[in-house]
Amino acid sequence: MSRSPGTVFRSTLFDQDGKQVGETGGTCDTTRVDNGGAEVCVVTYALPGGQLSVQGMVFGMLDPGPPPSFDNGITGGTGVYDRARGSVHADTIAPGTRRFTIDLE
Picture (cartoon, rainbow, N blue to C red):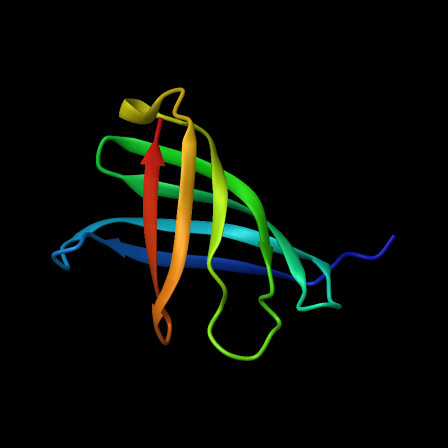
């Protein structure tokens, strides 16, 4: 069994006013390299009051140009986010910069 190439990452999180509010880190494993590629990702968002656990698929990351938008599901959390559910939406807004919108149910 061969292991698919993957990505490990860490990023600083800022609010809309540019104030640092936390960080995110995770891993993505490539599951497909044709048709723009696909990755399955497991990510943690460390925020004031606790953490959110998020996972899901990202498609098209091998296509030329800015990374595509995606939605991943919130699978749980700690602290004030205990038993959290909802989703995280990501948009590329500048080179090397993404906007994450967290929608808690």
